[in-house]
Length: 270
Image (cartoon, rainbow, N blue to C red; front, top):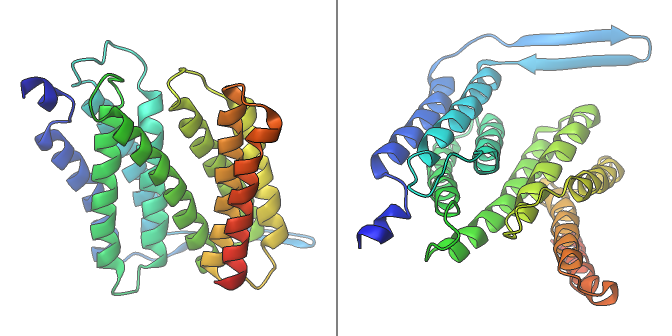
């Protein structure tokens, strides 16, 4: 029983970290501040980016998550003073996505539902990342599956939120490239080989941004837009993992093709 408990984070530490992150988001709801617009007006080009308290608090919450996750992981008995960057990546990204989603819901009564959902999401990612420190843990396979599913869900939530907010293309492209690249990089690193497949991650990010640019001006609903991008991200990540396992190309492409077809057919009939 004692060994089993060591596979999971301290409830006190995890509760403190989760509460601190959620408090940062709650302050944006309670404190009203004027909006600052950063603008750049050039011939044939106008750039405007609004800065609000929500923007700064999302950045603060992400930094707080990274520092808190590092603090949480170092309490693991199997930590062995190795780098924590791989375990910090997804929790920090979760906070960013949560902040972006709550900003969209800022004036909606469902904002409080978003906070509750965010608390569950953070608890899952904190626990799963902690468990993956020890590959021999009984819950390692479950934690790995949870992180993989969570990563794809985060991408879908972020892309859907960006589409719903009507963000312009020059902001949408870098956001999708960075998030798609980081998510695929983390998922591929979960295969247990301790490899960072940067070429595949960069390539997947580029493909996702090209699809996003092509679909940006289509009359798609936010969920349709999200599914149209999540499908290729999932498919290309699966293809990379299959090729790494030396599966023949003809067999490796079958699954990704099915994934893309199903996701895009869902977009059509949604």
